[in-house]
Image 1 (tube, rainbow, N blue to C red):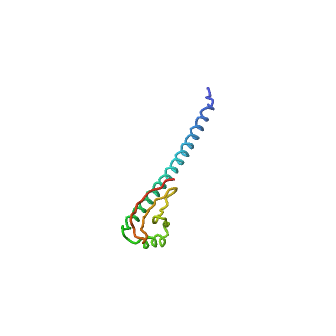
Image 2: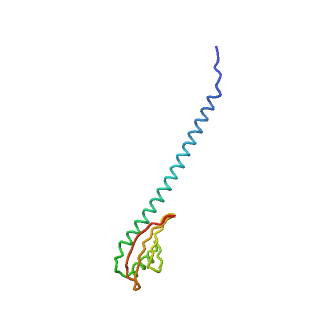
Image 3: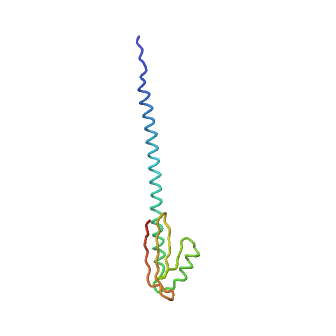
Length: 120
């Protein structure tokens, strides 16, 4: 009777296959994590721009700006700053920000408003 000797390269192929599967799983986890982070940043940018547009649309031309500045300060969800031309309301989003810029006259009445997204 002849005995079949065990083949050492069969075990090494099995080990290589296991390592490849583990490495492939890790690559998929990393790709999934990066996709999740990207989706969160895209959503925060969309949400900031949406909030800025919604806020700007609620400010009628000719209205007094004071109640809207008070609202921004009260809710403390965004910041506002007084500029030489009027007010700028900032809506942060990840690394970027959406702005609602409101131009006012000397009496604090709204002349113009516009929304813009500022990218880093």
